[in-house]
Image (cartoon, rainbow, N blue to C red; front, top):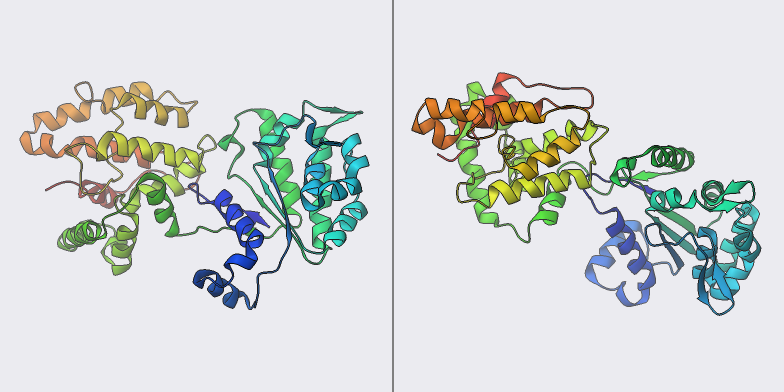
Length: 397
């Protein structure tokens, strides 16, 4: 089973939850929340199982002594040792010492010995990039680990009582930006793709909750309700100038779940910017939104919601973050010409049109919104007038 989530949606947290669920089964299965899970699954008890955990960012490609007389050299060696200690390691000792991937029959014997087995694998991409430097006869440890993972997926599939759960990033640039990482990413995708069942623990509007929990300690629900009600009243008043979908009760619910972000900002980052090859969909989104919060939302002039026109492109640090995402295109001169206060055309236009424009930063908001709508790795790009009007309505009145 492969876990994929956007926006740092808790892949590793899911593995941690699985570990504690199985490891502490006898102590927690009568708790209310756990009992509900068991009832939904049609189970009376949490199945007892042995758990092996491999974290690619922590695992050393060099030999590691785990106890006197046992030195582990590979992913399969670590799994065997965690499942059965020294006894379990002996079943795969020859394969571990040679660093040659074990056969399917050897793995099935390991699983049959311990009856119920849960294998949790996290961040294997990072380990595999490093493993390419370790020679194994005419091959290397990376190639042998690829062979092991393929054999593992097949052996698990034919071994009752055995489960294998791994995480996979949206893109290799979540961790690395070079050719070897790209090759490793694609190879892992093909290996897991042959037999995997993909699960996305966080989908749809749950993304809003993930972003809020990552960036804010708490959310004031009363403030969220009153703010959304005020926006909906404004949308009703100007309904002929706005996109149709924003006037529905469903959209009001989306706004409340996304608060203090406007859902339009999250949608554009996920659906458009998220398709850019150079955009780290998980960490990139959170890093960008964190800078938006730091620069704009914590200031005295912050607007009620953080919207598509509130990305502080005039801030040097935030601008550097955006330009890094859009690498390969020289956007600095464009931003300096149109957006950056005291130099930008938008700022000067607001100033020329008087206090109301300058106070509300109307031209500046429109310019930032146009910029945010202009980037996509494929599909929709650009913006219609109704959505620009929509962006302008996210302002303090």
